[in-house]
Structures are given as structure tokens and as C-alpha cells.
Length: 143
Image (cartoon, rainbow, N blue to C red):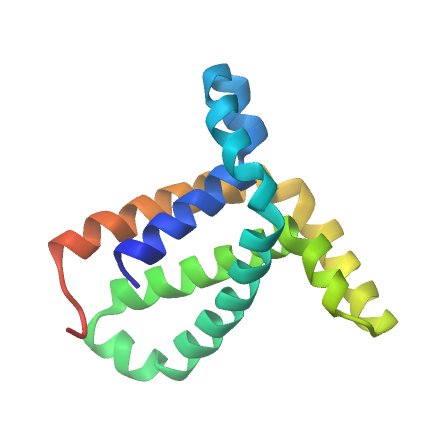
């Protein structure tokens, strides 16, 4: 958790909420268009990174909740957002690696459930990402 993870999450949030952002600020379309060609790979990496974060936050829950509960909650939230948005944005890339029809079917069901919430998750991801960047300057946890 920290500066790089916060910036990555904010970028993922911008891609996830691109349509909402462009609706409010049409001049942002040009900047978002520069990153959009890499959206699938950014999403796929984020989904895998999010799974690792979810597992890690569960494994460290006992220690982190006692010592730094706000960081644990931030880590879990960022991991969940990375997984969900990463899955939505990287589904095309991920499907090229998944060969089992049952797994593809489950992924499609999850995508159908998450898709209506993509814009809101993107905005929340931007907020959490900004918080992670700010907190990385305010506090240092774990060296």
C-alpha cells in the first residue's frame, strides 16, 4: 500500500469512470484516450493484484486490525476495487487465458452483476487512490 498503489488505483478508477468523467469534463476525453488502448492489460493485472490483496488482507487481518485498522480497511477496499474494476476492464484479456467454459461462464455472470456499478466504483477508486497517496506522505507503515 502506498504511493504507487494509490496512483495505480486512481488510474484504474479514471478508466472505470471514464464515461462519467467525460460527461462532466469533455476535455478529459483526450487524456483518457491515451491510456485506453492499454485498458485490457491494466485491468487484467489489477484483477490479479486485487485477488492477491484480498487474500493478503484476510491473512493479516488479526495483526493489522489491532495495530493500524484504518490501513487494513484501506488495503481491503483498494484490493476489492482493484479486483472488481480490473475484472470489468480486463475481461477480454483474461478470457484469452481462461480455457474452461465453466470459468468463463462464472466470469460472465460476475461481469453482469458488476457492470451497472462500474462508474460508481471508478469514482470510489479515485477517492481511495487519492487517500492512499496522501496517507503515504502522512504516515509510514511497515518501513
